[in-house]
Length: 304
Image (cartoon, rainbow, N blue to C red; front, side, top):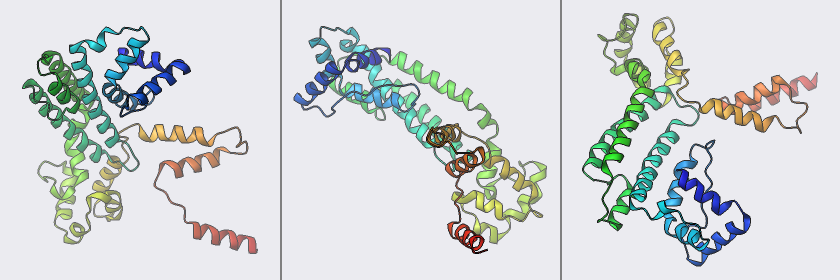
């Protein structure tokens, strides 16, 4: 990654050199018109930067050579393997990150994506050991272009094993609470015998209620649990409230901070803490103001 960032900075650091590179790509009728900047703050940029750099690698190497700048790694076959492999794996992580972001994401949805990624990772590990790159497009493309160049399987397998181990540690808590998450995700398929005693009688009632079975929709869990009678299912509702309020990612925190920066500008000098709080709640939740009700209340107030 250091080599990639260094080359990009060399190209884009000065305006003249940057324009010359863009003209160079235009003359070659390249598929892309420029390289992308990398920034650690924007976590999706790593995969996009690597992909663009990999696809422009011959053009970048030729341009640097024309500027009397030699980067040995760009012509090193093993380094190219690592670049292609890193590009593919990083894009997989980017895809997972996108699945975990967004409003209304519940812990059960995120946990499903995590489990799916771990299965993909295990499958990928076995395939890479056999030099099967069917799910690694950049690596597969490089393999087709240079079949005689030996693939550094040992290092790539080691990297995948390390990533797999890190996932196991990072999401260990979710695996420990898998039954609790599954109970929240679909209480109708939960094993009553394995459930906590406080849930067992309530689950027996719930799983044998045809009306609630018909009303259950996995894509609207919050509405389903909110409609359950509190007298009949107090513990299940408490469990649902606990699960639905878990922060599975930092998305809401990051979104709130970004929205606050947009709202608190020097031009809004009359913005109070109360107004800011209300604006942030509207921005980061699914609350929708009843405009007709508010309008009618204002009209009634002004008529007095």
